Length: 113
Image (tube, rainbow, N blue to C red):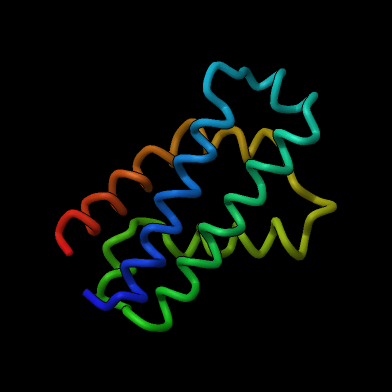
């Protein structure tokens, strides 16, 4: 596996871990009332989406092993370009239902490198 591909996968893993750490022990109520927490989570999702976007341009085979990578990149675009329309419930739902799977898929790719 190319070094650049490994770096991008590591960036995704690292940002996913940060989101998990940020939200450890937090509720949705905590999330929506804490501007700094929301900003931190959104920033890490931006990094994840950007890393996947770059990965899709240099290694289509690897990125295809990450389920819903196209949706994640689209989500990153919403966070950056449609920031006035961010739905906190959607972000929270993604954390609760998708983040663990993403981290596991990325870790499997890194373990196989």
